[in-house]
Image (cartoon, rainbow, N blue to C red):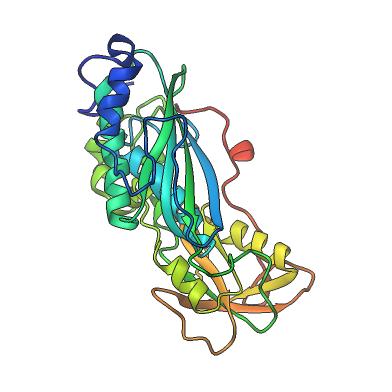
Length: 331
């Protein structure tokens, strides 16, 4: 593989050692306002509501990102954004992140610093009250990131996937489709003659400046709209990580309902089956003034023979499945 990007320079993590690497990373991360932050065996964070939500997510080089296509800062941004979105989908305000990294011994320290910069940029842009309060470093043949995120419900009940009711309005906040279109562009134009991801091909083809590729690298989930939806009385909600159809199917089954998409609001193709946009799908009682960036895309029906309908036609609940869709090729 050709040189991924300019971050890959300088001494490696194996040469510098864990303590020095940790020091160089922590000073770049957003601290937030924990009662006790990095430095002890655990962080201590406050939970004003006496309840908190917690989620975790992994990103592994190969199935989740490629160095030929994403900078370390892009990976840091995405690792933070995807977890912040899960917190928002419960109607909670993100308050803290815990990040674990496993990197090959020959990884330059600048790669981890750039990753930390990307985390900070995402938090500053999406959830400025949140901070990184702890984590872990290890080594692995494959670069692996694990992020746990915590959030405050701020007095609201959590918004679950199981609360949609017949007669509710189905609405979405955020983009539908650009991340999948960006990934398709990279697999088409960002590979070499053998089909391997290539930084040189990505640059030469112009894919590097494609706005859809930018959304694949750095999703912009509508974090503030999660708590806003909870305050507006959302009956069910989830993060659109794997694609509208597959995620809407999960909500339909959890709630025991059928979801009907408005054909003009949900076109076929990447808007329906593409993943990694990390928008929010929610249901609201009829007549609710939809908050923030939410827009109507359909309605909730009594449970029928199918999870999803579009213009009365059943919709396959297909989307990203790491076990079904990842075969280790091209990377």
